[in-house]
Image 1 (cartoon, helix red, strand yellow):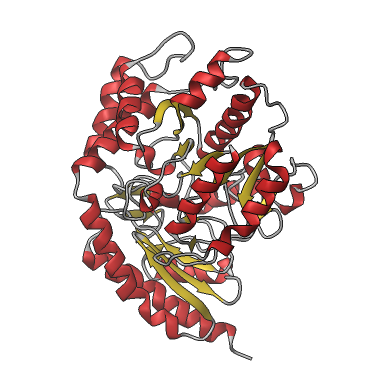
Image 2 (image 1 turned 90 degrees about the horizontal axis):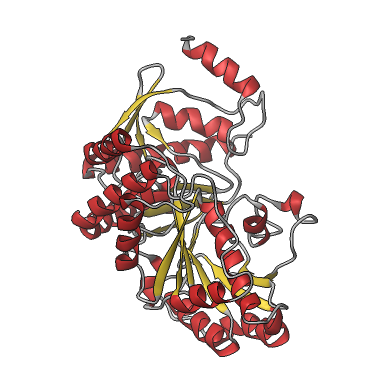
Length: 434
């Protein structure tokens, strides 16, 4: 085809990338191949992927078991509609998900992406109350600094002021926002930390369909880790005021925090849960929304007697087949040990960043490492230097973060954290020059 330079030139002028401008000057690289934890770029350089292609490639790349699942399925059929038809990959994946998720969850809706899974969760909550004749329960309570996706419903429950969607705030449904929890993970929050939630439930609980939160880790809204005790108190308040609880586990699910699902840190279960990202091991797009027998049976018994959502590519056989293979591979692996080893490596490898001027905080939980800076990162400056140092990560805002594949070796993890630490140190020096 074209040369690397020609591909990039065409791309810049004609293809949108996430949160980008056509013709923009952000660094752009082509990928020739990927295997293990490494990407081979168009110019032949190899880089260690430190963020699992936005947190989803937990097994790394070019995984034989996942490739085999795709090859086997595609020789049978690559897609059939899910309306009136079903197939083994979807059924077996749903069975496995229900085995792995908290016990009350008993039904599965397969969606196209994480954002769509959140839309489905919001619609489930509203339709549940509609079926019960409580038509006024239409709004959602959520946390500031949260992020739940880029579609309109998902945007409406993401942070309205400091998030990525502020320009749409006048077009979105008005939800109820409460302060983000401040008690760190591992500590017990005071009862007063839930006071704003209790107050809003007392004032407006009759109009609230559900509370939606990212359990333990607020992801793209700031990569913040908060107390499991907060979730426990939140569950109690939702039960007391008769409000559903939605856990958005799209970023935290499948072992990333050291538990299979982050809600397990609090030993509670939501009424509705969304999963995605790592569900297919990063091979194809797929997500799911799970709910309880109470929600699904109530919803199905009300008018119009069915759930009002159904994507064309729902439960795509290729996607569900590779998701089944990926989840089985995870369950059969020593993933807890691997995540614990990554946590130790991240703490050790990033510790030196905490002493650098311009670094506000370094925090690690499971296979997540975050260096929060005092000022925003200049992506045009830092991205080429990270690539030159042999690593691929994608900083945003004031955050330089790592979420490596679980298969990363101790040696590659040391190389990753060393490169990140060196580039941050160089960046601090660069930004402080007169």
